[in-house]
Length: 168
Image 1 (cartoon, rainbow, N blue to C red):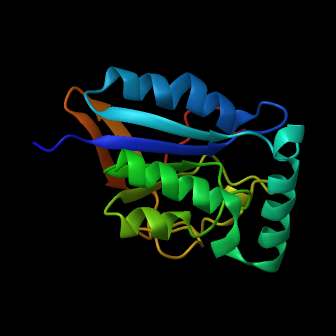
Image 2: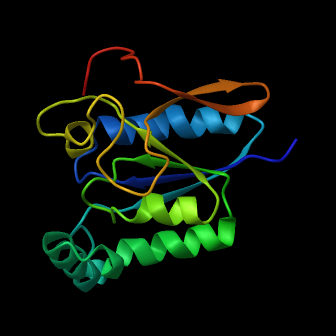
């Protein structure tokens, strides 16, 4: 059996939100218990560190103009994918603050893309991009998947995730 290598990609919130709790308290611990290798690429909140100020300005300008190819986040994601060579890439909290070309990039490198949708609240761009079958970004596998962890490692199945408790 080929070794599964999972890369989780996440943009943190300035004030810790549900997606931050999910990756820290559920996803990464669950991956640690599975037999697959995993890594996480976490981006800090936009404009939270002066060292990255100009990079964040460029990210926002490119986001606003739709220049996905020039976004600094895409370059960082490309570097990590090329170095780590994941079999699966889990996108958690990436719309619109990380490049929308990232799923296509992951797929071009042979990885299955998984979008983790937490809810459909009106102020959640990830939830608003989900139409019940797939997310709006082009170029990924084109469907939302739920994840099951078992002793053999990561198993992805099609379908909408079931809410496990209060939405948020």
